[in-house]
Image (cartoon, rainbow, N blue to C red; front, side, top):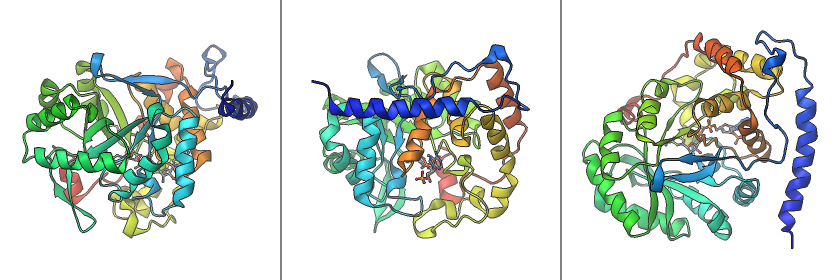
Length: 380
Ligand SMILES: NC(=O)c1ccc[n+]([C@@H]2O[C@H](COP(=O)([O-])OP(=O)(O)OC[C@H]3O[C@@H](n4cnc5c(N)ncnc54)[C@H](OP(=O)(O)O)[C@@H]3O)[C@@H](O)[C@H]2O)c1
């Protein structure tokens, strides 16, 4: 018997197909050339959120949806906290729409984001992959420095498993490299957890090339999760090259630059400082928001003539770099989720990607991405 969800999905996608076709009917004039021989090949709007990509190599690889879902903002650091039951429904909807990779961490909340993800995905556990992270001390509900001591990793994993209502974490990341613990010891601890069946794959976040190599020699790394968006392309010079050489996948976090690369944040946007790191990050201060608007202008112009939104162009740019890149945009809205997933259908021609890259490369982004302790922690 046919799964009723499939019928619902098909109807949804039929509607999407009509919408996609009307979007593509947009005028062809653009500063960005859209010559006939460069006609886009993508199936935007067709029933296809089933695109898959592979992170990592060989027996350490993981096949995942081409776009994952960053779950952090459903409880943490994105100002408002939406209704919990609605977020549970959205997480399940995402799985139904074809998302298989769900990203969380102990520190998101702390704890409550793992609990949310665990409750939402428990009934679908065999169909989805959960990534989580260890690496911080938590005191009085706040992050209190780094801690990747082996005993601490073990204890965090035990607690994460309970919150996630599962017996294994599919991809376990060290959230930040701890300069006080040799990375080989961290990799060795995760290797043991893999042998025990509590963890399936090993990942690092914001690790230096040197530490990636050292860790990989002990326990092959499946994915590096670091910040990567059109507002922060430094990884193109270093991390992506190491990943390519070692056969490690790359998971861009904050791929929409925490919402900026949608065009919906402007200099009047208020961030609630008690639950939003953007309130203090230099790039989200009114002057920087205005100064960086040239980026939104480029993405708007490029997208307008092809039927894409700013967010879709931003995500499609990342996907176009390498077939082993899997962005994890976060959202609390089904409309945004659909929009983001659709970007996996976009295929730039070589010429389009060149034009887009040249245009964004001319823009000097204003405002540091992190400050203080957070800035130090991404240098290890
Ligand atoms: N490893 C690390 O150190 C690290 C650090 C940060 C984040 N992460 C992971 O990366 C994930 C994503 O990062 P992020 O949340 O920082 O940034 P992001 O994905 O770049 O942006 C999320 C923000 O963009 C908005 N948004 C998403 N899609 C949109 C669309 N189509 N149109 C308009 N607005 C849209 C969301 O608001 P709405 O809810 O209104 O859509 C949200 O405020 C997190 O959930 C987390 O799992 C990891």
